[in-house]
Image (cartoon, rainbow over all chains, first blue to last red; front, side, top):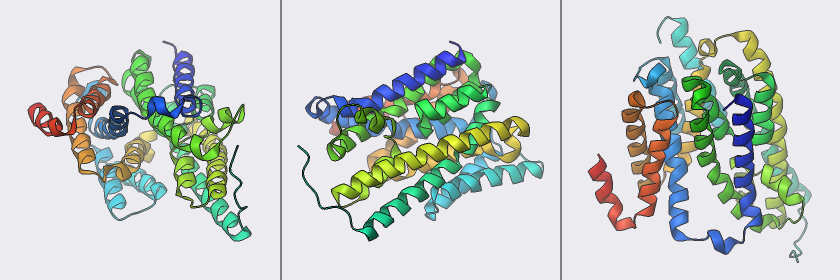
Length: 104
Length: 240
């Protein structure tokens, strides 16, 4: 798949999903199993993404580097109820600072 | 026929618009990191712009870029799959918002494109129907404008910056995912699913191509969701 195919395919599917809620009768989608699965899907995906993007290096090898510190700071900031943007900036600054001092 | 509802007072209108604008600015700001990470992953400026304008869903966009960074264009299918699975929640938002907006015809397409975490959150949070509509549209448009403008800035600057790791941008993406995950962790079930998913992903990662570990973890969520609640605890223990 070329990059453009990837971009356009992902975009088309994303839009189709957004549109579903506006064109499909609600009764079709108001099913308890669908609700349970769709409630847990983003949780699993986001959590797995955090894990993989924090702790894996090339080839999927488990790695500990400045990203982990950045994410730890992000979690701390979230516990302290910092706004979203502050959380993201603190994580970046932490990782950048550690790397500037030669670690990670 | 739409219910007639009282128009919003000037004070409330200003409150909603202020909230929409601040959400738009805050959300747009981390588009800079998306733009920079995207060009670092090998997408060109136009592909990066296209993702923000057409796909327009932060988590999916970061997921695509993250998977391609790890696996190259060979991981494209996994990138699309992850992006699409993440996009399912926008469909659920659409279900919620379509009831509140009562749009028809072409406006449904505009509403759909703007249906994301932030526009839905601001819309649904308002007590009055007219404030819900104003909140949704204003937030959606504000985020769309800021997100796209700052994506371009990030992509252009990113090309000049070189390695995004110097600026810790590779920590920005998982941090953003943490932020999106956080409000969803309130239920005990969700925390268990999150923990199991993370472990599954890390166990699978050294043995599978990029993007696959996350999809395997998602499979676990689907299985957990399909099981009737009283069985869920048993299977989670079995899988370890």
